Image (cartoon, rainbow, N blue to C red; front, side, top):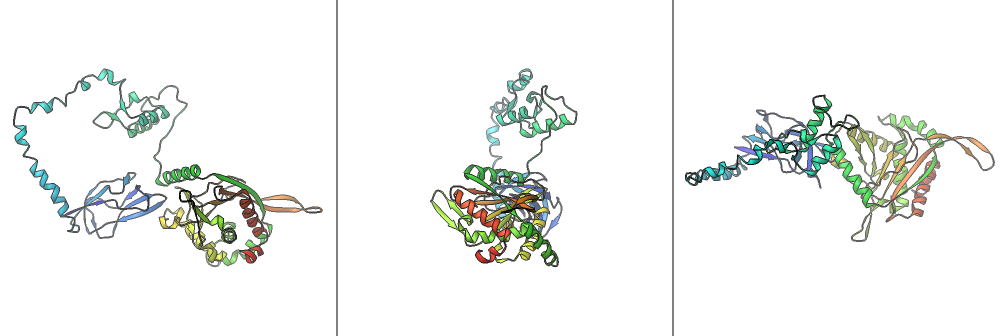
Length: 418
């Protein structure tokens, strides 16, 4: 008996995934629950387990394929007996099909033969000018500088596909095909990863549905940096690193309690505001595969060392490609810190359905002026707060950002108000 194993549900609103690796081959014996496939869907990697024990009779997917939920992935022989009747039902009609042979016996049999020999096949000359390709395929050819008349379709039907154009472009770069005149230079085409596709779709949604405002301020972190260095060994003792980001997460969690409007989501259709009484802070992590935003849950209930430990663990998982969908869901506010790379102010995009995000730039030594005289240079950190102007007004944004700056400069404020 055989089971046709189709790609199961991968998560909410996820319709497809990219095959990172196929973990079995035809002839392999597998146990129930054994991983068959590694899939990248959304921004998460996951392994797909076998539904039953048996032998792999056929593999219908390959590394690099994009597969849809419900698409056939494997045929497993000797699996569970329950699905066995299903393949038998289609088999009955197959046996019934020889009956039409009675209809093929009469002389009209030559009629089907008229189709395999259409006049189109006999007219190769015009074929060079009239190619069969969809508008998006023609557009891709133009963008890559490919003369679509020179592309040989792989499909028997003679219709040129996106893959045909891409393959032609790759051969061209390798020197096997002449390039279309007038193109500026060589190009190369690569398939978008699931992470990049998910980022593209989500960022487009956020930017087009949220009216953004970004406000900037500078925080004096001279004292904070001294305290961070002094207490860093406490975090190191438990294998963590007390970073400015870890400290900021605690500051932001406290600020959200003082300003609940920044810890909500809105439903424009119902004209409702949902105020969240939990404080899950997302942190943007730069990985080789792209941007990920894992979430530190209940940041308000953790001390800075606890946050430092959680932050180190989740960032490590993200960079190793072991992050799960659950790790990136349920955030109420996001922090994105580019200080390790450089730069100062920027305009981060609000991570919907959240209503605000805090961007952090690189701290610099700045000369400053006291009330009556010049003072020593201070270490100052640029902050950029973007928010959803449908729910947060400019004055709200200014007060929130000012509170964060003052809490950084005077940590006592967290204990007094946060």
